[in-house]
Amino acid sequence: MTSISIGPFALMTSTALTLASILLFWFFVSFFTRSTNYQKFATDTLFWSVVAGFLVARIMFVIALWEVYQQDWVSAFDIRDGGFNQQIGWFTGIMLLFIRSRAQRKLATTYLKSAVITGVVVFPLFVVNVWMNNQTAGKGIDVTNFEGEPETLNLEIGKPVIINFWASWCPPCRREMPILQDAQQQHRDMKFIFVNQSEAPAVARAFLSKQNIEIKNVYYDFSGRSAKELGAYGLPTTLFYNSEGKLINSHMGELSEASLQHYLQPFLEDNNET
Image 1 (cartoon, one colour):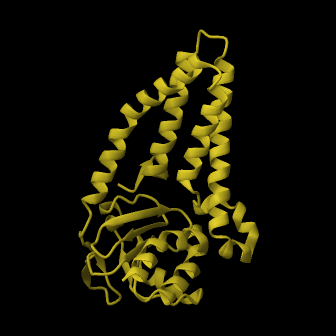
Image 2 (image 1 turned 90 degrees about the horizontal axis):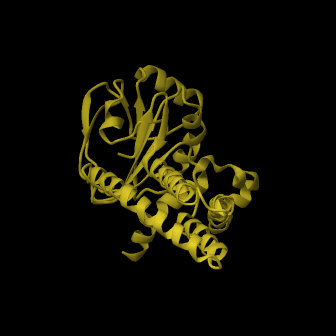
Image 3 (image 1 turned 180 degrees about the vertical axis):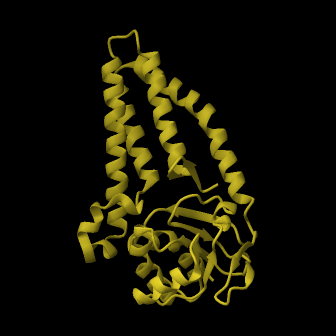
């Protein structure tokens, strides 16, 4: 499952689990320090560690893809593209916790205990999510082609497959379409598939024509079932499969040129090696 739906809202599963981990860790730290004189210091340190990790993760992502961001440096502040170096962000936050608590053994013990309990609770959910995503490996999806005929799309075709679920009424979908169009034209060794969700084909085609969007492999799914079968519950959602049909990454929300390049990089590196 790449995303979860909570009423009218949808959130990437990995993001939801990360937020749950932070909030749960915060709860345990507050609980274990409730009767101490250093509770405020403990929670303040945790707050600034989260902030520092968030900022450093974004900064390092922008630096790594500065060649793209420098064409429109204002976009570096637009975090809607989901561009974060998560590993460095986590490392920064953990190191700040360690540095701030090293002089207080009891606080360091509290952080460690809270982290262990949080891991015991949340880690199985990460494992289950990975397992569920792996169940879609090689799975086909049923859609309707341009002629209005039913067709099953195979995800295991010997080269990377990128599936974008979109709708013309969705503003982020509209904004990212030119970026995906350029990527499809540049990366002929990858197959980009565009599946319109819950719209009449005539409406989707009218939008593409009006916006002068020329993309190949456009399909339609009036019921919206294909996205849900792959665990995608929000629009736009883009799924990245390797040549074996295994889900490597997913992104819910608007893609920027930089974030799309980030997701395509593993495929480009594999092609260079071969």
